[in-house]
Length: 392
Image 1 (cartoon, rainbow, N blue to C red):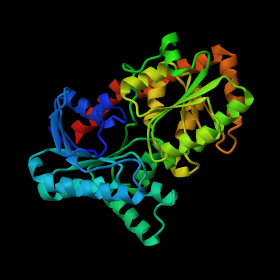
Image 2: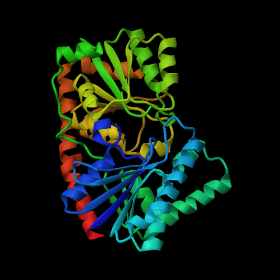
Image 3: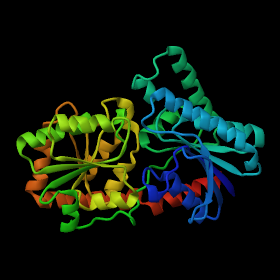
């Protein structure tokens, strides 16, 4: 088939960031399909053939995580209408795969269905508009009602829906009971990320010799609630714990977090900036545990964060500060632990067993890697995705 993937935030592996759409496009090419990825780029319109065999078209729509909520919303709408203007060149395509967020990606997918008869599948990575509503960005009851109605309409118009977590799958099924909702979480690239022994030269590079290393690798935004990380680092400093935090990523709160670390005098926190995938692998090679943090909002417990699956693939202890399906899973599989977000001092108490008893850490790391291989390996989920597409 000729398949169009709509994803405003496509990332190439060489540049880092969330690369799910790259994985999906590659899986479709390997299954024999012709694929075009339509995305956005701040530097203007670009078009190229990816070495994996799919076409990438980048439209000139600037976007940054540092944008305000409303400026991001404008960028979402601009991208949607830019796709509509390009729609004619995709006449004759067999299927459209629309990746949210943003929810507005459903607009051009719906338009392509009406105008050119191209059916679409709708991927739900976050429950919009519930996320911005619960985070307090959308306060108008009328706007909330309109956006919830639009969400349900997108689900009804889609041929099928793909949810990235069990919680999202359940919520979408309630909203669209007549639609098939598949579960395909983010993928663990178990070939690229592997358990590795710490090398002295790499430890020296990051200044973490003889330290228990906790890495946070992801967005530094409002929803991530990374004041929690700062408080955990401060608790470790006060307790004299041999813990060092490596923070990789950028976002709206990056500058504020750096200022907080200076103000609190935290020598045990290093900010690494935005990292490529190769650099992430290098950081994980000296990492003992990965931290995943979110603000204390129930809606944020439903997500499927990429850093969770990268950490599992690399065989790392997983530390989280939220409940939901991931907490249940890491406790069941004995590959991680939950820390109360209201009591960051608990972080030291819960974690010290792992630097005091290396055998415990080794066991949890092995369980993490086994979970990645058995449930989330890229090869397994790519085949599942390809089978779903073939049935549509």
